[in-house]
Image (tube, rainbow, N blue to C red; front, side):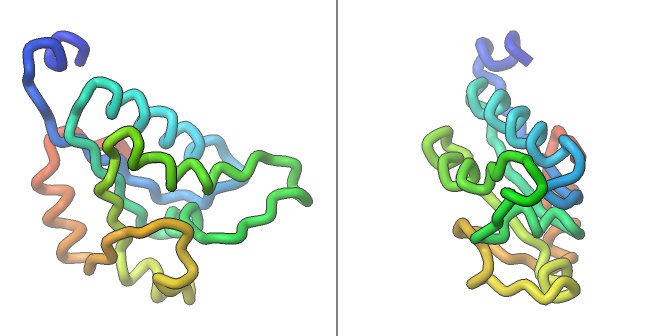
Length: 127
């Protein structure tokens, strides 16, 4: 990856987040990997499907579960040129979440549009 970044080759990276934000390390690790990809000046997008949409829910309180609330990190992604955040509409609807419930601005897309986003990506990492 470092050689490609130095040679000017830019790839379309898509980081797919499918898991709830707490209870495992997947969501937090996804953020770490996204920041690494952005540091190499790649075309970085993030997609949130299934329980991954809970990662973006605002006003999370993690005091009772003794874990770090990293939701605010999503708003800092823009500083790293990670501006393409996509959420599957059907996943939001199934969980009773609306755009107003989300902590950051995202583009809400249909499952068909999400499939196309995945198809158009060159490197896909699932978390």
